[in-house]
Length: 326
Image (cartoon, rainbow, N blue to C red; front, side, top):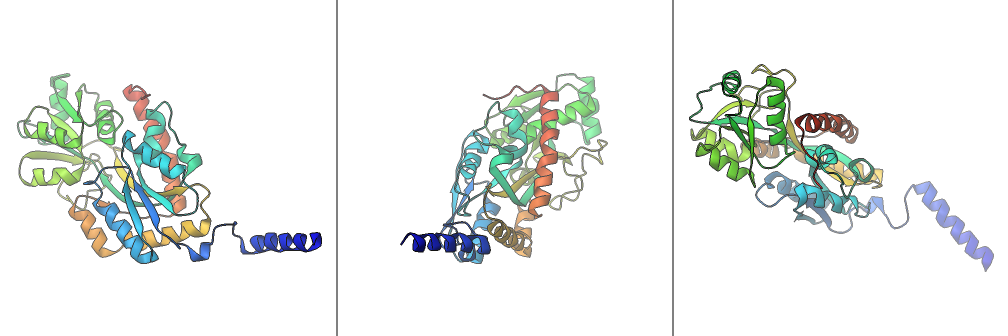
């Protein structure tokens, strides 16, 4: 009996070695049950991520349950993904803030972006827009800078929290242009736009989706985009580099992540389906229509991006003197 049991154990181990799978995970059958896709922001800012979830469900033949897990600037969602079983059934869409900014901005995170989270592919991105209210005489970034130099600390910029990309964009401008401008924090982007239109603040770096209708309606004046090249949704707006600030680039990105330890075959399957979804013409057009850009890259390219961005944002945060959040 003991010999027979040992033989069975040997055959099980040999099977695992030969097939390259771990007990309890059948990669060839993946997925065989619903997948949970975690997104760290509230409804309303999730148009493309929800389309992505629907298309992924159709491609894989299983439900993809979309979950808005909000709080702590997306850190709760990131922690949920990081601590999930590495079996491909809890995946998530996270932002640059969760991976490359918050490690410096927060004194302590409940997860380690490098140790706990595996990048699969970028899926979405957009630049910020630099806009001013209609009473501001500046028609270009240089004119705005000249105005700020003539009136130190008189110009105000709105933002929705220290360490957000819109706040850091303003800090980069302040540093590169050697100007003194005052930041005014708000609870969210809609409040920033309301006070911009009402001319209570001078300027702001803002996301395109809620801002483009105001620009098109003549309620705000755009001066530049923060991408290295002109944005497909606003080709007439110059880049910050064209405006005289070489190297000024801030792209807000959203990427697909899984827990570290997820089998390579599952990562590859998710990557392949994600690329098909985000390169489809209708998804690309929908993204452009709301001021965003559909993206895709390989897991290695995505990992390289996060590795390069982390020290860059750390230097921006430290140079701006932003205190760490407890």
